[in-house]
Each structure stands twice: as structure tokens, then as C-alpha cells.
Length: 462
Image (cartoon, rainbow, N blue to C red):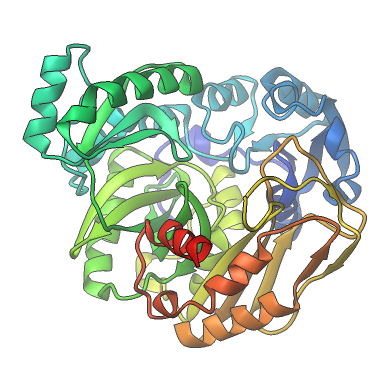
């Protein structure tokens, strides 16, 4: 057995996990815990008192009002709930506090286990400038542009843009989720873009720091999933294509990414795990790249469980959620890189409670529900007939995942699964998803990160 990098980290066992999240990811984590023989503590806001996963948790506590700032983002309330229930670990899921370095640190200082990376790793990778600097040092290919924040002097910013070459993209150093970024096609729009993005960054992320990169015009969004333990072992679990996006928000994901050679993927995957060893990363993580003209360009690393992790689970055969929990317990990875074999093809559709044309959130009670079943079909959700969709949180209500031997067969399986899925009482994006899986360009794998928005424009004009 490999010697642990940090013996203290490698010996922290726990038998109860507090799930500091809600919705489908709370249900997913609870399922992983129960299969590992762990007890669970579910928390909720006033709006989520009727959550189905609360009924199957060992403890269920309401920690605050419906407003997320006073419940799911209330660090003191979450830590108090862990103390009252005897939880030894906290799983943050995704979103909310999952990539909050201060919360990770507070959990550890409270004598609990944070099921995720160390606070220092979250801080490094959460700041896009420090992340880029760390990746350049580790040999990970990055988008052209300096690894420093932009100066206040506009003349200096103009020189940087000229050196990179237009079009450029301005990004908030502390940004994420598609916010805090602006494309500048030509020099005459630079000053306004800087002013607007600085203010947006200040309001959204608490820091006006910006950086600049070359804007790639027709890239795909490719992800590499990594898994690292506290014994120095690190593996990558194949790759995903998440190019089908609207306003930088993913709609459909698939694994593996079509049309990229195994040699090219292996080269970048190897670099990613070596970077993890260099920064002493632990847990699950995702390296996100733009891919254009045969080259990969690092854009960010997500230091948490991803929404789209199921497509990698389906193709790799590895339960990523369980592995993440076991790593936090100090258990060495049982799988080596040579053991990782990804087979078949998987798609995930994000089902959102929103109008399929305007994309406005849909609020109300689900009056009837029919979800697909059968070989190669998986549904991750927390909803049921009678469930009330509230206006307080993200519109994601379910994830429909399929797996089949080939991409063509997986697309056919997804078409059939979408056809029989029925959610009544609210509006959903199911009509949009059904139409996408009939699109010929998507079927051929001929898409980039701009494809969906262009497709929507043509659809409206028709």
C-alpha cells in the first residue's frame, strides 16, 4: 500500500456525512453514502421541507429560510447542524459552498472532514490567474494571454490586447458559471468592455481583478475528469464533450468527446494528473479545456463533483461519488491508470424547469410524472408527483443519462428516453432536448460552444 502524503489526512474515518446541498445532487450523494454503509444528515431550507431525500436520511434539519444566503450558504448554520447531529464529515455537492476555500478551512478547523480538496487547492484553482500560473508551471497547455491580472492603466491594457491579437476575451479573475466575461472583437470596444466587466466582477465576486486571453472563435468544450487520493495516486477517467451550451450553461454532455484521437486525449490526460501531483490535489476534479484545430487550451479547473459526472461513471464503470467519499476517508485508490478502461458512449440531458422558448424559470407543482426505465438508462432526480418547484434555486430538476455501445446507439436510446419522459404541471425544456437529438449536425458531432445559440436563433427565425 502506498504511503500517505499526509498521515493525518489518511486516517480520518467517519461514519456520518452531512450533505450541505439540495435537489438531485443531495439525493445522489445520499445514495452513494448509503451504499458505503454511512449514515447521512440532510439539511433543508424552509422551501425544501418536503424534500424526498429528507425522509430517507438518518437526520433531517431545517437550517434557515428559503433564501439561499440564509440557509445553504450559511456556514455557521451548517457547522452547527453537523455538531448537533454528530456528523464527522461534510459533503458540499456542487454549487453553493462547494468551491469556497473559507468554508473548507472552517470545516477542517471544526474538526470535521471536508469531502473535497484542501482549502489551499480550492483557493489556487478558484482564482483564474493563479490557476493559469500553476498550470503553466505544470506544463498544461493554456489559452494565449498573460498569467497576471490586468493593470489599471488603459494604455497598458491596450498593448496587452495588441500583443495577444483581437478578438480577445476579458474575464473576472474570481469568476465562474459563465459570469464575468466579455468578448472584445476589435480595439474600439476595449475600454467599455473593461469598465463593464470590472464592475460586474466587483459586484458578483467581490473583486474587480480581470485578466485577458485570446478569444477562440470555434472551440469545443472538453473536460478531463481526475481522481486523486492522499497517497500520491492520481488517475484520469476519460473525457467529456460539454460544447452544447447556452449562455455558458451546459445543456447536454457526452462521453467520450467524439472525433478526438485517443493519443491526443492520453497526452493531455497524463499532463493533468501530473499537475495534480505537483499541487498535491486530493479528491475529484475536472480540468476544462477549449479544443480548436487539434490543440487543447486550459481554461479552468473545477474542484468539486461536476453536474455531468454520470456520463463518466457510465463509460468508466467507476462510481465517482463513492470514490470521492472514500478518498476523504484516507482510502487509497484501488484503480490504477492502466486499469481505467472507458467503454461505450453516454449522453446526459439536463432537464430544467423553464419555458423551452423564453427560458424563463417555471414555478409550480408537478401534477404527474413519468420517467424512463430500462437497460442503459439512468435518471438522477429528487422530484416526484406533488413536488413543488420553488423560485429560489437553480432550475435543474433532473438529469437523464443513457449509455450504449456506440454514439449512434446512445443517441437513439436518448431519443426514446426523452420521448417517454413526461413532467406535467410546470414547463420544462424537454421539447428543446427532443429537437436537439433530431439535429443532423449534432448527430454527426459537428458542434462547438456557439452551436446551440446559433441553432436557437435559426429556430426562432424559421
